Structure formats: structure tokens, C-alpha cells
Length: 65
Image (cartoon, rainbow, N blue to C red; front, top):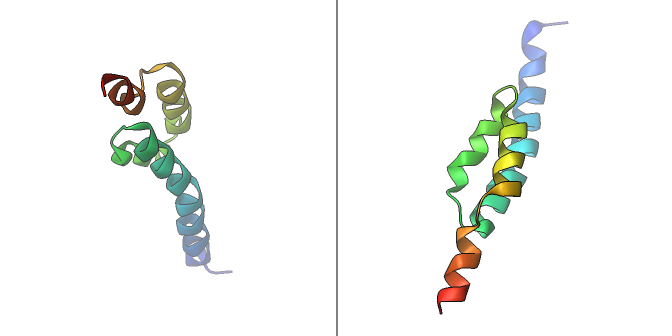
């Protein structure tokens, strides 16, 4: 087994994890680039805390109109 056979699996897993966070952050009004934090160890926990406890810019803009 070649050590580079795991690379496509890692890329697929990264896409599988980052894309949902990208969509959530975009819809919530945050910068979607923050979803790349999911690629570092512990980054998903940080993202979940941000999503759970931050004031969402998308909701504050709706109230102003």
C-alpha cells in the first residue's frame, strides 16, 4: 500500500467537513472563510461555539429594515 493513497481520502474528508460550515457561515452572515478553521485540530469545536453564542449579523440586519 502506497502512502499517497490516503491523500484523495483526506481531500474528500476536508471537502465533506468544510462545505457545510461554509454554507452555514454564509447564511448566518459571517465570513465563510472561517469554515477553514475546521481543518485544524479542535477547529470544529471553535466553530460550533462561535455559531452557538455569537450574535448573527444576518438577524441583526433583518431587524433594522
